[in-house]
Length: 84
Image (cartoon, rainbow, N blue to C red; front, side):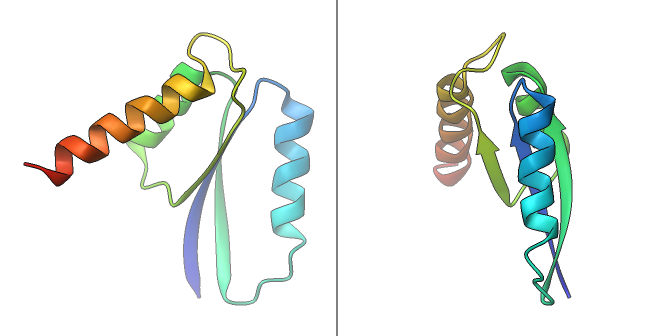
């Protein structure tokens, strides 16, 4: 079994739970999904920094730090790591 860490970042808890439910009901016998939730962009970046996230579903309209800014930050970090 392959474990995949999934980050769901959305300020609406109902939406986060609905996305998690879709993954859990996918009947994927190969993958086991571990979910991390974030209600704002700052929390999303913290979760990414603290965990090995394989997939991130990020709302673009997050409080504190927008989803777009979260993605820009991830890109900067990855580029920095690539060219070190």
